[in-house]
Image (cartoon, rainbow, N blue to C red; front, side, top):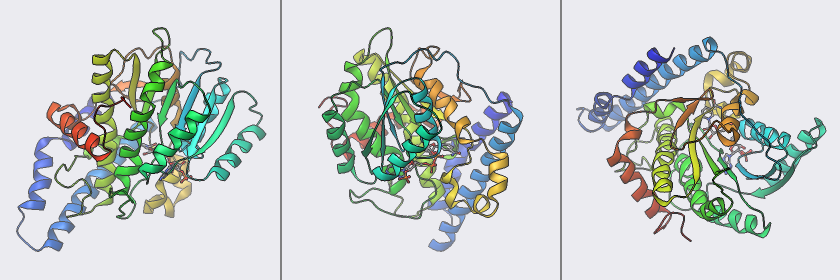
Length: 360
Ligand SMILES: NC(=O)c1ccc[n+]([C@@H]2O[C@H](COP(=O)([O-])OP(=O)(O)OC[C@H]3O[C@@H](n4cnc5c(N)ncnc54)[C@H](OP(=O)(O)O)[C@@H]3O)[C@@H](O)[C@H]2O)c1
């Protein structure tokens, strides 16, 4: 399955196709509306080819369970968006390993209810704290870190999980497109603010870990450096793909920084699989045929398996990699381009006003 997968994802992310889509935007003669229509159609087609391929692949390739998970007693993790979906299942698996888990999400009452449900299922190990975080607001990210520091805990694992997919155009209070803010930029700032604490809690034997939730959709994405917010032509699919590509590229460039600073932290990116969660609430076919989605997509507990593997397994000894189904996989060519990595780093630092990453 790997060879056709590499070929297909490679083709979908080939510079030729990116140039072609750009030429559709900037060079195709015709009205603005026509250009926007072609851009939307192009993104739609790419998304459905990729989606169909991934669904077929996941039906044919056996699901791998995480291995090499040793005792984690007393270790502390933060999981963003841990109140439902893949995040909630990750929290559950961390608790089973007797970890202390900080669950960060928009509504603390519903997070507490989620914890009560976990406890009522008979999971009594581990500790939880629920803290408010709205990734649509950079101030909320800063406030979360202030609240976390009040707990006076070490920090060994950060799972940047929260996400939205295919939302209509919306600009945050800080002036950023919502997918960019929730899926990427908020997590970029959060990681910057928590970096010194991850570093302090890290050791050679047990390095701290950062897990960034990306998606196979990154293969069809590109970063529109000239117009990150997509103000000229907004397309929800392109906005999601851009944010997930950024999350992957952030992983790769942060790993280089960590190695240069000898930070002893492992940062990796994960595509959790195509998983039946509320993430699909804006996808017409999944809304119309929820039974079909539940039957053919992975279950949320399967979606958290690669996250848990990358966060806890002793088999993970390096950073900067992209994982699917508990294995390292090829990322897109766009995400490996040093010029793109540099530009993303510079633009992100300037958007959140960071002079030196990880230095407060
Ligand atoms: N499901 C898949 O097939 C799939 C595939 C590839 C990648 N992923 C990635 O996996 C991650 C988890 O997705 P999921 O499938 O578990 O989705 P989900 O069930 O929709 O959960 C998303 C989580 O993100 C939180 N969230 C949304 N907006 C937020 C905001 N502004 N501030 C803070 N938290 C916010 C939600 O909290 P609320 O309850 O407050 O809304 C929820 O806990 C996402 O990053 C997604 O892109 C998923």
